[in-house]
Image (cartoon, rainbow, N blue to C red; front, side, top):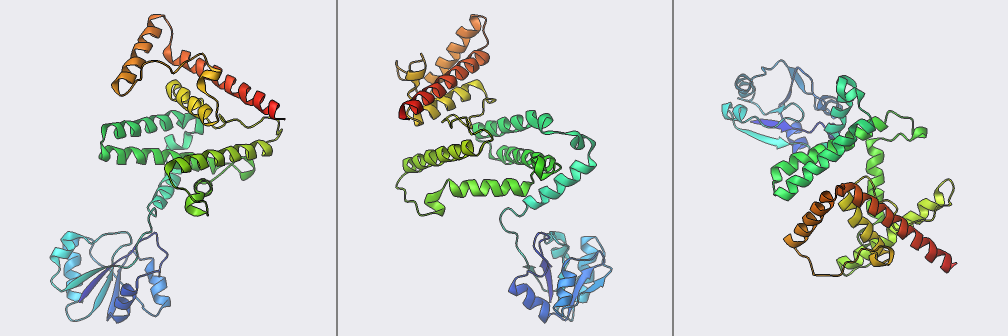
Length: 338
C-alpha cells in the first residue's frame, strides 16, 4: 500500500492531521526525495525516521520506483512540499494507493508567497529596485481603474487578475516602506494588516462588540459616528491640535473631480449640512434616473467644452470651493455652540 502525503510549505513542519500521523506511524517505511523535505526533522523527532532516497524526477519512472517499494510493504511517500498529486504519476502506479493532505493552508495563507516574491523582486529586479512610492502612484490608480472596468463588464476572470494587480501594489508600497526606519515612518505589510484589522473591528461594533443594529441604515449611522470620533481623536493628537475636525477629513482630493464632488456632497449631507446651504448648486428640477442622469452629465460636459473650458479642472475648482464653504459652515456652527 502506498500513501502519497501532501503537505503545505506554509504550515509549520509537524503540524499534520491525525490521519497523516496515523499513516506515518503505521508505515513500514517513509521515503523522501534526495532534495530534502522540511518534514524530516519533525518526523525524526517523533521517532518516525524518513529514508532519503535518490528518486527519479519524471512522473512515470517515479511511479515505477514507488510501486516497486510498496509492492510488499506499507510505504509513505513525502511528496515535495506544496505539490499536488500528479495525475500522470497516479495513473502510472501499479499498487493500491491513497493521497493524504497532511496539512491544509488557512484562508489567505497564499499571500505569504507574495511576501517572498516581492522581497525577491525588490532585490533582484533592476526596475523594481528603483521604484518609489511616487513612481508607483500612476500604477496604483491604473490598476484600480482596470479592476473597476472588469466589474462594470461583469468579467469575473478579468476581475480575479485585476484584483491581484491591486493587491500587488499594496505589497509593493509596504515593501518600500519597510526599508525606512520605524522612527521615519517605516512600516511592514504586517503593520498594514494590523492597522486594517483594528479599523475593521473598531468600525463594526455590531459584529465584534455589543452594539445592536436592526438595519443597514443603523450600520451607516454608527459608521459615521465612529469616523467622527476618529477624526476628533486625530485632531486632538496632532502636533498643533489647532485644526478642528471636519466631516470632510479623509476625503482624497486627488481623485477624479466627479467622484470628488459626489463624496464631498455626501459627507456634507451626512453632517447635516445641505448642499444648497453652502453652494449655489440646486438639486431641484426634473428627476434624473438611469441613462438620463448620464446623458445630462454628458450634455453639460459638452457645454463646458464648447465654452473653451476643461470640465475636470472646473469641477475640481468648484469642489474645492464647496469644501471651503463646508468647513466655514462647520467653524461657524462650532463657534455658535461655544
